[in-house]
Length: 308
Image 1: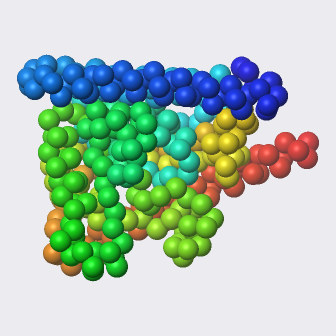
Image 2 (image 1 turned 180 degrees about the vertical axis):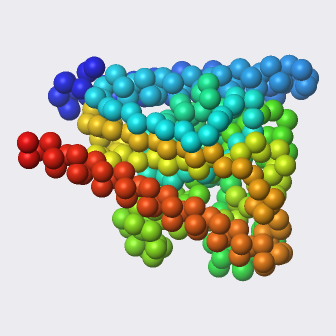
């Protein structure tokens, strides 16, 4: 709608709109979180959690509303399977940009329970965002390097312990647990550093997903294999969006059953560990091929339109 405006207007306008949206909903979320803290009554806490999830969903709706307002963006959303707002889901996604969080939160609203993320502990100290994540019961994960663990062996397994505690909370009400399986946003530098065997993805990390499935596998309705593609803006997606130059968003959701073979003791059963890693690597190979086909298709369409 406003994409005709010049970049020097759209850039500060988008920053302002997204900041207002963030501050508005995180302030409400933090207030409700503090209320939940001082009113430890189960019935009241369930009601407050319902309001918190509503605020999170509205944050996603408003974020995407701002994107649509200032970008002439085409949406291509396809869902292979059935979803319900009353189920429990494990959503596995690739990670390209901070825009991904807006898209997944918006996708979850009205379709499935509100999305909950495993977030890095450093975000706890980010104004508004950290307290907002705390109020929403999102688990904070602190990752240690192998060399650090060797020097401080008592910290081994702390991430898994955080996952276990979070899963206990998530069992109480329908939840969508979101896992960016690559552990980080895709950049050319990270792609090279991690020697990725995929063209458009970083190698997946299996431990946290396997433990989540082991903790809640019997409760999950399905696994959602979620794919995000920006076929006409493959680099600097956030900057393109803020400048009103985000052209197309492609979302693919494949709904998978939670088979018995997906749950097991990842850290002590070598057979299961190898099997689960193979399953995840196969999913990632299929995702990489899907992304390639989407990008190639749009490149062909763009080329044909230019040659007419």
